[in-house]
Structure formats: structure tokens, C-alpha cells
Length: 265
Image (cartoon, rainbow, N blue to C red; front, top):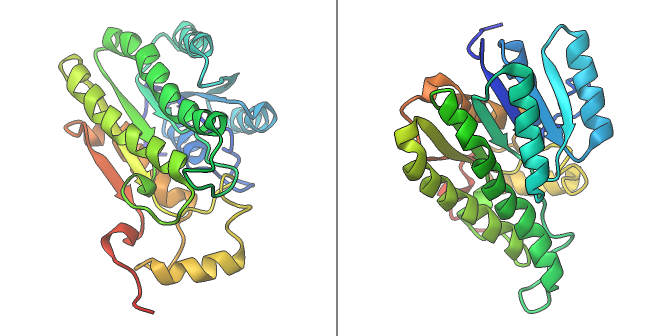
């Protein structure tokens, strides 16, 4: 235990997959490591079964953690989560917004249903807006805080046709992080975004077949798909005091994908 989060209180949204004996999500792993490093952690998600099981296991390890149901498109859910966190632990220092969805399948702009577009954008962009708005007052009361918005390398590059809502919403996260960083910097609240590349997690497991990954590694300069810990360490850096002079930044962790035009054949 490094104790780098000792005394900190964190709300981790989209972190249900925090059981190290199962396939981890990077937000879930971030929650687990923060708890191990001394934080009091509230995990919020819509996957109640998985989240509850993860927190029970964390509690059995002697870690301080709670689970809450949170629909990120509901302002009332956000208010309830923040109120629970502060009433239970007295403050709120860190918020990680890791919830998000994509299109069910690749659909071109001319064919995507408006409701499908709204569903993706609402979870990502409305969710981040409501989240930041809900936590900043409590962070001000604590003398500052750190907010990490989990975006994607797709905010930077078009990898394939038909993921327009996903890519657009993730790009929106990065600019919103900059806007919020400027607005809340005088309150000592830092807001950053993290842009993961292809990562094998519960979110991607169905798509990332062995055949798919064998093809994709040819497009990755580091020649492997990321694991949850590759991304979680970046999240934890931005959440911690180690990044105390970092705000309005994008941390790109993609194995070099966006730096390379790709193989010639």
C-alpha cells in the first residue's frame, strides 16, 4: 500500500467491475487501487449486481468502499450520490466519470436513428455535465479536488466508419474538460480527460475476439492491446496530488495508434 490516496474520498462512476478475480474495467481497477492506497471509495454504476459484488469483496479485504446505483443521465441520481458520499465520509475530493456507451453496431450518419444518437451522447456528454456540476460545490468546500473524464482515442481519430456518435461524444468530453478546468481552476479544482486506446475490458470483451486483436496489434506500434492497468495508472495519476499542476489536459494512452498513419500494407 502506497498511501498516496490516504484521507481522500473518491466517487468512481462506471466502476462496477472492480473484482480482481474477474476481468477488470479500468475505472473499477482505479477504484480498487485507490481504496488499497487509503481512499474511501464510492462506486456508482447501473450494473448493480456486479458493483455490489465488487464492493462486498473490497470490504472483505478491509477496504472502505460503498456501492450506489447511478444513472448518469439523471440529475437526481447524481445529487443523491454526492449527498451520500459527503454525508458518509464528510467530503469529496475525487470524481472519475468512467460511464459511457457506444452504438450497438457501426451505422453511417445517414442511417443512424436519432434516438440512438441521443442515447450515446446523453450518457457521455449529459452525464459528464451533470456529474461535474454536481460535485464542484462539495469540492470547493474541501479546498479543491480532481475530476477525471474518461474519453477515448476516438476523440482524436476516425478509425472506422459508423461510430460517429461515440467518437463525437468522446471529443466533446475533452473540450468540456478544458472548459471546466478554466472555470474551476481558481477554486483549485482540476479537470482532465484521459483518452484510452484499444483496451481489453468487460466493455470491449465481446468485440475484442482473438482474431480481432491479432489484426489490430498490427496497427499498434507497441504491438499489443492495452490491459486495464495500463489505463488505470493514468487515471490514478490525474486523480492524485502527483498531478497537482495538471489541469485542462488530455492524457493519451493508446500504444502509439494516433501517432502512426498505419502499416502500408
